[in-house]
Image (cartoon, rainbow over all chains, first blue to last red):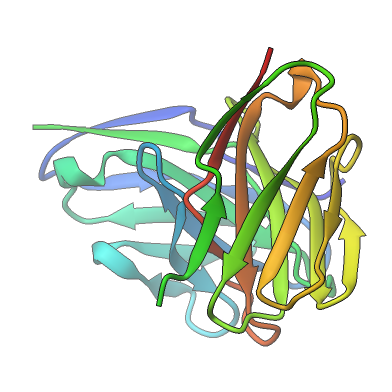
Amino acid sequence: AQSVAQPEDQVNVAEGNPLTVKCTYSVSGNPYLFWYVQYPNRGLQFLLKYITGDNLVKGSYGFEAEFNKSQTSFHLKKPSALVSDSALYFCAVRPGGSQGNLIFGKGTKLSVKP
Amino acid sequence: NAGVTQTPKFRVLKTGQSMTLLCAQDMNHEYMYWYRQDPGMGLRLIHYSVGEGTTAKGEVPDGYNVSRLKKQNFLLGLESAAPSQTSVYFCASRRRVSYEQYFGPGTRLTVT
């Protein structure tokens, strides 16, 4: 079965420190990969995507993600975390050859402390 | 440009009641989606539409129906609500040529 895994329910980081939110996937074909962020009582907001090309993708709010085909991973990173980055983060994947429906991970809650 | 809007924002239903959730988008997107979000479950696709007049089932379609009579609107119906349908419902849309989806603010539904 095709799936997306976010192995950490919660990630705690001190403000100013680098952060990583992990995502691995198991899908057929060449996947398209996405990260979304959800602030409390809000809808999901698109952060960044990987379709093809450079494995390091830059997105909104200083976030970036690295596609690693051999490890089937797409980890979200930021060099210096802000308290305002605290939110729920979702990884999503479009399996290769599909009509575009996304499979979402269960989400990782990021908590950045001052 | 309002993006994706959802009506209502909150609703409480009794078991067996029916209701319709409305999703509207003003971005002229071809594709529209309905998801439900439950704690620890991520987002699960209920139904989707690839264009006006067409709908298809997603991962968890049972107990729901949808209609896409106009390109900008996507309706989600619950004919006989059950407590298991207590959830937060999100609508999303996207252009045919681009895979990132744009989400509405959500509808929080409680079925007692």
